[in-house]
Length: 238
Image (cartoon, rainbow, N blue to C red; front, side, top):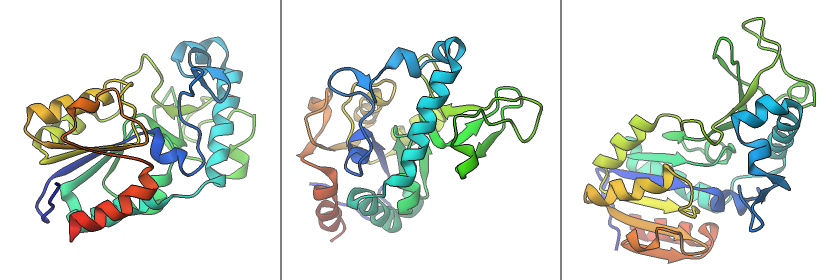
């Protein structure tokens, strides 16, 4: 059973399952498609080079969807846990939505990027652009240089996730490592639990189904995160 004190070091990895409960479709559906598109057509740098219009419109649809969803009780429960642990909690998400930050999470790393943000491939600056004029099928130009086409600030397949050294360092030092709503399919995120186990951390999972790396969890709670986490956090903090 997990027991937390204010100095317990915790790293939490969240995946698509926690966002699915807010109405965001999971990254890869059972048929292997994402919003009816093959992954290789919308989620690689080669797709961006080959058909930027398709990729742009696909992500503009995903960006617009953010305005239609809200954080759920699982997001909010993690905020309560962070308020108790403070800087001793690091939340790492594979999700590219903004639900964790909208719920109030502060110590947060988006290892696969963020839909809210667009990035210039010329000057490499990033911009939070979610106004109506930024969500059309027209390319958004860079405000800082002459580049006429910003790209989604998303880590595509064949690209390196963000802040990996910081993530690995935190996992190596944590007392408790938690996976929430993640299937254990996508690497390097799925390998973080191996690092945690080797470092002696207690590994806890919450997911609707058993993940690929189920056997690495010391404690596993099966069900919807939005239904389980509020009670679990209350138990852990009592």
